[in-house]
Length: 321
Image (cartoon, rainbow, N blue to C red):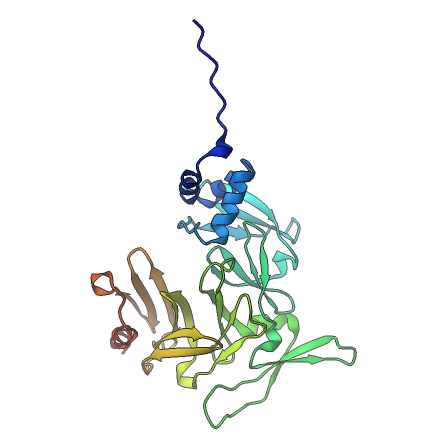
């Protein structure tokens, strides 16, 4: 007796909870391939990204451009499957941009006019951040035809009485290399409520903007001794900024203002410093290089709870003297 031929499975009718469980386990190359299976899987993949449910830790990828290729094409080498993917990205050309930061799979890029754009190299999505001319210390200068000639950068902080030194002029193409130090995102910008925090000159100060809803950058007014920031991260609802003196300041965003908690900085300048968060271990790692000495400090709350900000600050201050 002949066996009946096997019935063809209709994967488009896979139960939603099973499909979501499977998709959330995939590395991003397989995740994006899965969207090509059928319209049902495509809709599920888009929904997972939009709702922020696809948050699997990813194997790092190497992004680069090829001088022999198109300036609008980038290549992404995946360490997960040892494959290279070519991506046609939107204007302005990716080869002519500067990369200012990377968070949640998105790049923060500065174009040839020093304007900032968020770019997802895997999907081609792009979001423009508020104009550079809206920053506190920046003044655009136009010629008689209305064409942008240069940007003037003012050198002052929140110390009163204010002492403003001579403004320095910069061409639009060179301004990005002077102004921007780093941009950090609070979450995936495709989700609601994402905030971009920028470390910028003069004096490595802070400004922030909501990715959706803000038309200008908001200056975080700090004194000279509170600025000179070298690194910043977002963790547990707040931004943590480290300055070159070893101080850590915690900022939460309330409307257009920031609420800051911190301790005075030490008198020793760190030539290099940085902050890293390990969400699984629930710990914050601080890196310092002071002259020829290198310190690596782990801060982990007891009983997996969250330390109050003043406790974290005391630990940091003790190790940076």
